[in-house]
Length: 147
Image (tube, rainbow, N blue to C red; front, side, top):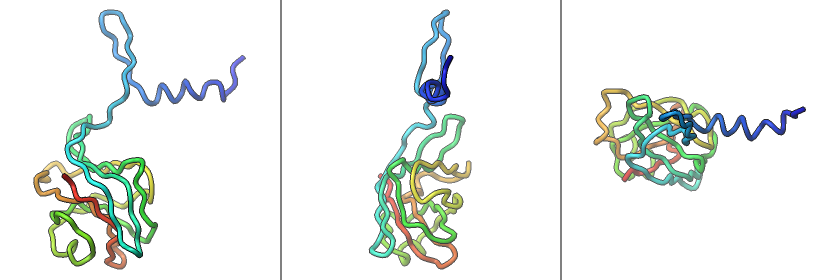
């Protein structure tokens, strides 16, 4: 008889792989959610530390997205939003407000991996940085310059 704990590794393996059937042979491959296009590292300020990586990725189902990697971490706050900015290296609110940006959604968590879909008509050449912005108070929480 199997216990639930004994099946946990199997459930994890199923969730993180896809199966391909080729000429009668079953091959397990890692499930690729996205293909990397550009990336950067988050930097905050004294009041709002931020760390980890962000990248623009091509999504498996088509289109592009912003991926905050599993090492992403920012101080929590009210109404935090993820912006894609035309600012090449925003280091504070003034630089962020001076550049055009698009809001790709509410920050789902102050840490860990997350993906936000970019609008289909967004020009990727204009995506210079990913910004965490407090909409409620108009405050900069961190940014990652994309290279």
